[in-house]
Image (cartoon, rainbow, N blue to C red; front, side):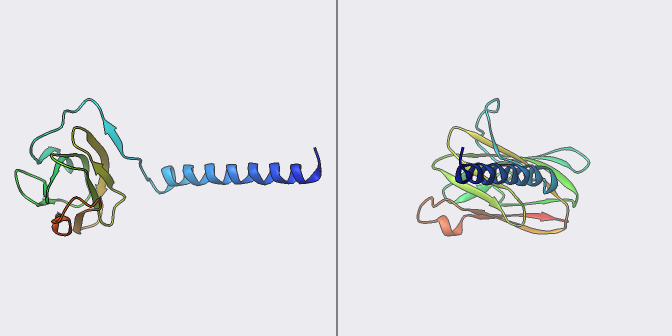
Length: 149
């Protein structure tokens, strides 16, 4: 192996270790989680907020043209600060994107599937929910709000 090949191999290994370290840091240090598709939950027909305990919630978000249903038609919910929320997302009609500002929540809402991610809302405030996947003429108005008190 000549010097150029050794140098290239060394640089490739250094980059590989650097990227691997950054992925581990993002997952553990920054607590960034990867959204998953849940196969044991049937797509639901309405949004709902379920309280499981003190500061422990389950939120079913139903996305449809051009509306987020958080809880029986409501586009806004209130939860206490420090709450951990298991969020399940599905779509009734077309592909939508669900992004909660100031969090790492960014999940696609695909008809016939259920996406899932857990979010802990530490700080009080308003967390705006927007659709980030163009879904038709009313896309710009598709929004909701999570109020953390």
